[in-house]
Amino acid sequence: RPPIEVIPTGSISLDVALGIGGFPRGRIVEVYGPESSGKTTVALHAVANAQKGGGIAAFIDAEHALDPEYAKKLGVDVDALLVSQPDTGEQALEIADMLIRSGAVDIIVIDSVAALVPKAEIEGEMGDSHVGLQARLMSQALRKIAGALNQTRTTAIFINQLREKIGVMFGCGSFDTKVTLADGTREKIGKIVSERMPVEVLSYDPEIGEI
Image (cartoon, rainbow, N blue to C red):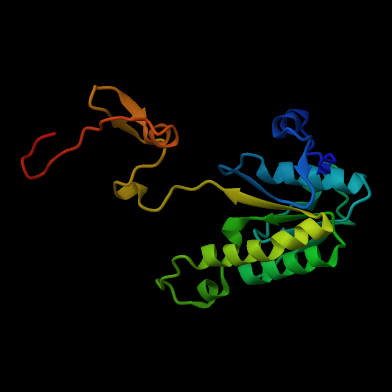
């Protein structure tokens, strides 16, 4: 089996942690984390490394927040960087699909998934329900570009942000929420679910007013 072609991340420790020496070519990569955790910085380092290897890079700036001077300090050739600042999520993903299918780019960064707002939401009225629109948009786009990426060996980096899940503030616990077990100990919901722990959880019965 031939070795996987990669684009170095710019961080030796991250390259080692990934196990293959960088971001794989021809694949979709998601870089996610809390706000201001260095997600765009990692992506720009990868862009710089791709350019140093003679590759062409594109940056879909859906956030409209790309700082050319900062990118230049990270080693990015901003004059050679293809930059697009789309107005809608559909426009951003259509541009990405077109660039990938052209075979002209080695790496494309989409910053960020959260900023890929569907046209219907942008043009709709305040208060309109748009639940699931973005999820459907992303699902369709990823299915469409996955095959093209493999053929053109383009690396697509999607930057995503960790956000609180809908419903957490109304009693639906997140994975970090701790619950009290029947033996009196407390454990995170995430650990119970991921490790499929056979536990008994204390619950309150409103009918009898007891735990």
